[in-house]
Image (cartoon, rainbow, N blue to C red; front, top):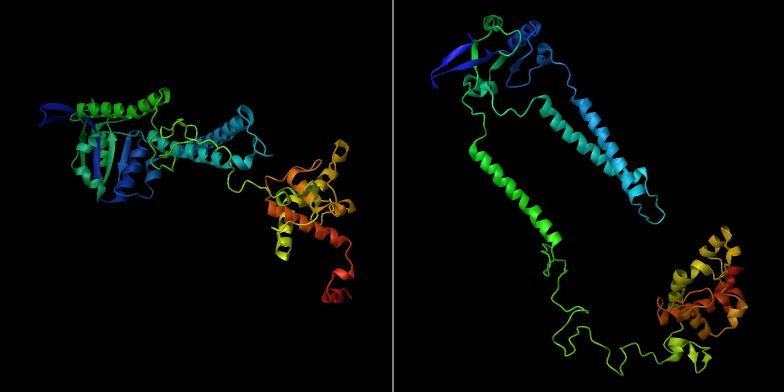
Length: 410
């Protein structure tokens, strides 16, 4: 009963086990209970669809895979947190404004991703390992009747390698309600070694897989005068001569052209001292230049520029109480050489010519930095005009108001 003549090969094939075929899943469950109670260890059932109750009938215990996945997830979480803490707070601290080197909220996404990655890979690998997969070949693959396991038949196999295996006893145990019970011969038709074509294919694929890494290593260690391949150019390599590149078109061979002697760039002559420097002759100008229109629009423009550049220190009303001043007072900066900003409505500034106020904005005064590079001349004069309005508003009288404005005060 342990061997059977194989007419196709002319040799003897050992018996792999006893295979029983059933047509009813309920009968399969009862047969599984008998095999379980008999104490067999190496056996299994095969069904075309999940059968409820088959796990307890076979005595299958809950898998430990969830605990393995939990451990992998916690490992991934730990690796993600420790890796970010080490790289950002210990090994290479990176100063970004006033942010801490390491904080939990900023590191949650990476820790979460590593938790999922470790868990997913462990789930797949653990499932394959616990099920002893992959299994490239099995004696059931050569059993023609076994193909119906994907349709309407149910099978139970007891392997001959089981310690309690006895062919006659197993056949009697399985044959009570089985449609068919027969020995399953071992597979000696599938060669144990890998096919030669598969070996050649793996060698070729491995060689091809190494090529990109070899090319990258060569490019990293060598110099190349040509530009890299840009799938999306983004105008990185343009057909033009850059400033420091040689240019054969000109006699001096330079791409960047020197200034022409005796010339000034358009718009940079600035001969009008009144408009550009706030002076009339050697004295400060006391009137606004002709280019500046004294109007409500200019005043509004001056207010906008004043709020942007002047209000942080001087305050929106020009009294020298801006947010920078209040902050300096709160931390006691006055004891460290802090000079409070000037009150622009101070009588001393009221007496200054508009040209001198313009110069203070353009070139700075005392601790106040120069704003000439940030504010255009037209806007500087607009700010001066708004400052005059602030000064006038401090000492305003009813003569400065319209009749409707006077009536609204009553």
